[in-house]
Length: 161
Image 1 (cartoon, one colour):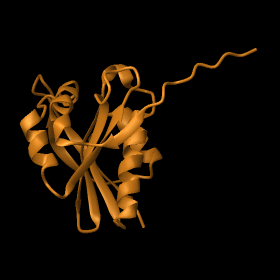
Image 2 (cartoon, helix red, strand yellow; image 1 turned 90 degrees about the vertical axis):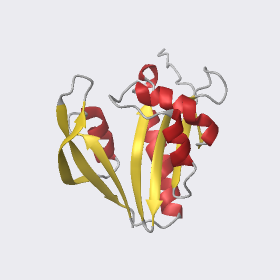
Image 3 (tube, one colour; image 1 turned 180 degrees about the vertical axis):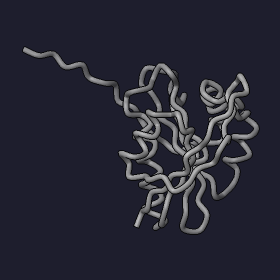
Image 4 (cartoon, helix red, strand yellow; image 1 turned 60 degrees about the vertical axis):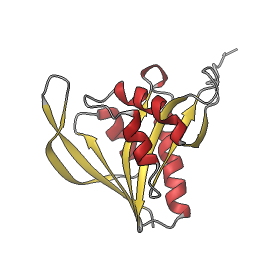
């Protein structure tokens, strides 16, 4: 008899301004120049910016373990940033967050979704390709790590119509 381990159920909900401090903490895990809670507050205050948080049943209720922040202008969307706590990775949470954005943009009849991803971020690039994104451009020396080393960004697009 085979035993199957069941992954806990993660909930997804829209981001709120009150999430700003938790978002800044998650963002700091992965980015050499993390965004502050004030920057998240300012973005979430804009009518064109939206996002989603992933919540774990094992954490304090309402505390995000992952999030995505996006912007919509006319019929195009853009992923501004996405992050998942290191100890919560490889559970499909990034996909769950991206699916939430895609559902929202489909409902709003958007034509395309764009994002930029660090050219060496193999797991993220693989996820985006599985979601139907294709590379449409690049930005040399776009990112800088904590040691000051630069790397390029891939500009990716997914058509939604």
